Image (cartoon, rainbow, N blue to C red; front, side, top):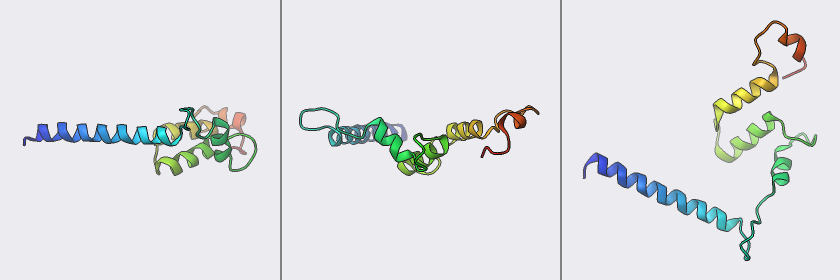
Length: 104
């Protein structure tokens, strides 16, 4: 079997496995009438809100997503969000006055 054919077969098997996994997850979150019965958005935000202040900040969202998907999940995007939340994304001299020293 050529390498190209091997990779085509391997890619096909991976797609089939992923599709089966998605179907089983959908089955898991669907009740007997076919209606979605999984956690609501409110449930998920409540799980992320570890300091119980009523909302999930980017730091809590990152922790939650990394628990779900593994360390480093969407690292570049979440780094950018955390940088903005910390006031580090703006390098102008007046940024420190705007954000203050109390920001993470």
